[in-house]
Each structure stands twice: as C-alpha cells, then as structure tokens.
Amino acid sequence: MAKYKTEPLRLWNKAKELRLKFYENYAKAHEKGGLRWAGGAWTLDAIPRGLGDDVWSITSEPYAASIAFNKKFSLRCLEATERAGYARDLCSYMRNYWGSIILDEYAFPEFSKKWPKPDFIFQDHICCSHSKWYQVVCDLEPGVPMFSVDVGCAPAMKADGETFKYVPMPQHAIDYVVGQCLDGIDFLVKVTGREYNDELLRKAIYNHMRSTALWAKVCELQKTIPAPLEEKTLYSLYVLGVLAKASQWCADFYEELLADVEDRVDRGIAAIAEERARLISDTQPPWGFLKVFRYLEEFGCISIGSLYTFGLVGQWELKEDGTWGAKTFPASVDDLPKDREGMLAEYIKFEINKPEWQHFYHPALKSAMMIKIARDWKLDGVMLHYNRGCEGLTIGIAENRLALQKAGFPVMTFEGNMGDEREFDEARTMARIDAFMETLSLNKIEV
Image (cartoon, rainbow, N blue to C red):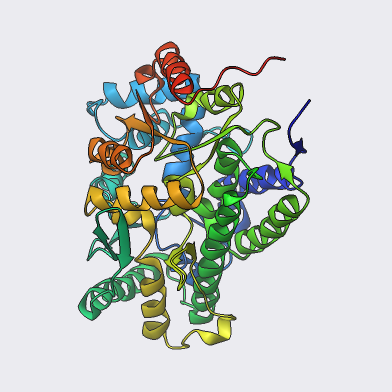
C-alpha cells in the first residue's frame, strides 16, 4: 500500500505549452515584425525588453539542453562542431549550440526547419566561456553585433567552514556593472534603430525580481516531508525562469505555481508514493539520461532538487532566524526608482548575489550552500555529478565531496557530461546508484 497520496501537477501541461511558445516566438519573430536576440541563461534579460514587447530571445544553455535531450540531433551537432575544428573538451552546451548553427537546423523543426539567425547578441560574462561562446557565434554568423557585460566583479558571499554569510557589494563593483549596462542600452539603440523605453525596463526588472523570488519560495516548500515535487519535474519548471525570468508571463506562472505547490503541501500530496530517503544533486544533470532520477524512486528515494535548480533562477537571502529563504523583493513596480541609472543599480544589487554565481569564486561557497540545504531540507545524502561538460560549475567538486562528507552526509559521485551522451556510462552509473542505496539501507520496493 502506498505510503503517500500522489497526483499529477495541475500546471504540468501549461508549463510545457509556455516553453514551446517561447521557442515558437523566437523562430517567428520576424514574421511579426519583431526582433530576435541571443544570450545566455544568466543574461540581464530585463535590459533588451526596453526595446519593446516584440523582442524575443533564445536562451543558449536551455536551448542546448533541449538539443542534448534529443540524442540523435545532439550527436550530429557535436560531430559537426568537431569537424569544424573545435575541441571536444569545451563546454558541451556551447558545442551543441554551435552545431545547430553549423548544420543550419533548429531544434524545434515544427516552428522552423532552419536555424533562426538573431539580430543581435546581448550576453553577460561570469563563466569562462560565456562571452567566448558568442565570439564564435559571430564568426559563424558574420554581421551579428555583440555586446557583453562583465558581472564577475566580486563575490557576494563569504564562507566560514560549514556556514556562509552575505557580504555587501562594494559600491565600485555595482557602479562597474551599471556603467556597462548603460553602455549596453546605447548599443541596443544603435544596432536596432529603436527608441528605448525606460518604463518597459522598469517593469521587466520588477518581473525579474518577482520571478526569481517566487521560484525560491517554491523550492523552500521542498523542505516538506513528503516533498511535493521531485527533481525531474523541477527541471521542467525552473527552465521557464531560465528562459524569460523578466517576462510578465513567467512571473505570473510562478505565482500560480507557488499557490499550486502550497496546495499540494496542505493536502499532503507527494511527488512519489514511497518517500523513504531524500537526496539532492548539485549541477546540470546528463540531459539524455534523466531516467536516473526515476531509477532512484524504485528504492523509495527522491531527489528533492539541487543547488542548480534552486539557485540558477532562485534568489535567496539569510533570514533573521538563520533559515535560507526567498529574497525579499519590492511590493510593487512603483517601489523601484524611475531614473534609468537608479533602477539598474537596484537590479544589479538584487541579481549579483545569485547562488550559482558564487562558487565561481571559491568551491568553499558551494560546499557551504550545499551543507545548508542538506541540513535544512532534511537530506539523507547527496549525489555529485563529475560533469565534464561544464568546467565552470564543476571546478572544485572534489573539495565539495570532502566537505559534505566531513559534515556527515553520505555522498555518491558519478561521471558524465550534461550535453554529450558519449561520455555517460549508463550501466556504470546505475551500478553506483545500487551501491549507494545499499549504504543508505534501501532495497528496491517490491511491486
């Protein structure tokens, strides 16, 4: 007999529809008289929204993850990139993305058979490959203008052993990024020939704050036993914030999602019927093999999320009682400054403490955040992906493993690649899961 009641997420189909609509809007932007732009998942995407409501982006990392999920298309993209002379040990998202351009094929052929070329590139730079990624895109697509903002100005956290605290950003660091944003707006006006609307920017900044804080609230609810959602479902939900966190539709959806998940918690609706143990993972999964999370469930084990799903979109702060919770954001758009420089300063101060940015500065910050989640979300263990596809988020992972073990949490590691299925050994990973479940005293549930 099932231990907990389960039921499908009410908003599941809506989330899928919104994601597909995003890629359709990008592909068909020119048919509607609009603009297309390219940039990364962490791009300050409120800024291009000042050009108008008919400006649509393709967000590079989730687009590349969509390619990786389609193993046959991904292999063709990766091989095309390698034939063009690019090294196989580069970021696998980047290689999938470049391959789509080289092949002149769109990952969503129902909307466009050919790759929809962007009108401009607007990117930011925290990972070592972010701006370099689009320099190559400019080589592959001559004539596409590019602007990139350096946001690697200072860490917003300080680790002290197993704990961390936020530290105020130096004013010169804020001024440094704001100055680049102002230059970026001048760039957008010049290359598009459009007037810039500060009120659209202001609205987009507010929606960005709203989306990221609401998503963190959803992740907070994962503390509940039984957890209302599991990691594989979180991937289908967090991606909307990665695609368009500064959009009205994304903020509205996350508000609706929060109410839905709160209702699941109130009614005791579980993600899996037999929750016997709780884990988290750390960064990107092997997108072609998400069934590893379903395999855990055969043991009554659930991954309730990851630092990646919690902190790639979500914005967090330490509360007075010591809990790590959703970041406080303005009550309304009217609480934001009306002058361009002032609203950008508030935007940067809000965005610069993103959890996933912090461990680019030092692995101790990632360790402290993961230990905080392990304790507060009542975990029994941690899975770490030695991900050869993303050097930026995987650097220091061996130190993370030691820190988590020292803090008392069992750790399972597995090797793979988020975007290159050739580097994932499915049988070996399943065997490692079997061994890890044994250390947690879990056997497969009899059916």
